Image (cartoon, rainbow, N blue to C red):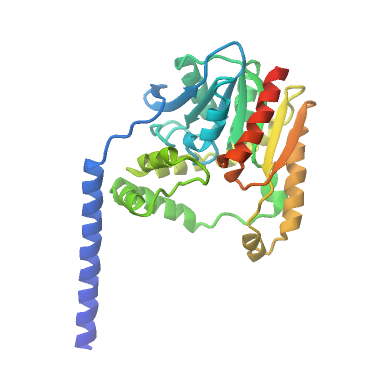
Length: 331
């Protein structure tokens, strides 16, 4: 028994020493890590700064404004900006806490977030009309922005954006509760520098397929501290209200709406959850067509891609950009 006890105490001490060394290495890494150099600008919108990256000449045509998905940095939408910048103004930005943007103490309700974006655009010297493009939950956010500032929105583009009733209609199980705890642990290790150090060793956690190395290398900036995950957790608190608001904003009149949805599904994961992939695919298609039907000038397009690769792969981004340029001619 004494031998077992000694081995146990030795193992605990070894684990404690290893943990202390990892934390020390993380703190040293954070102390000496290079200062991030974000593309674009950081603009104060009232006590904190939001990151905005605008490319393409300002002119009398509508500006494409891209609203990111949940926790997605604006750099994910690189190809959309690069392919359109010679034809129109393209604005990407990061919501509070995400990407290069500062955390905010303000509520993360959808009206506040829309108001922060509106202030950012004004202070950055951008002017309407806008074509709003929302990826994933960004599709909900552009509904709210349109309801608050209807005279500034010329058209809407939904990129694999969920239907407000998708959880109920697809009968998807709730997100595991342990995920939130995992994000908090990640945020704490980020503040200690451990997450950033691990990111350098293992490669960028937030890597998106199909983007140039010069873009993915900037993802290392997001894990220098825990800000990114703290920002995501704060924004997540407002998601139920966001979905409810989006559900009520369901008539865009004759304002043009273009919907792009990926057809690729993780069939193995769906089967493990007891769901039929073909039924899910059929219902998803129906819901995307319903989003297009919120306007008398709506169209839906279905691309071979997943939730991210629908725009991060250059060939898919080219299809989306082609349709956006057609929409620009209409306006």
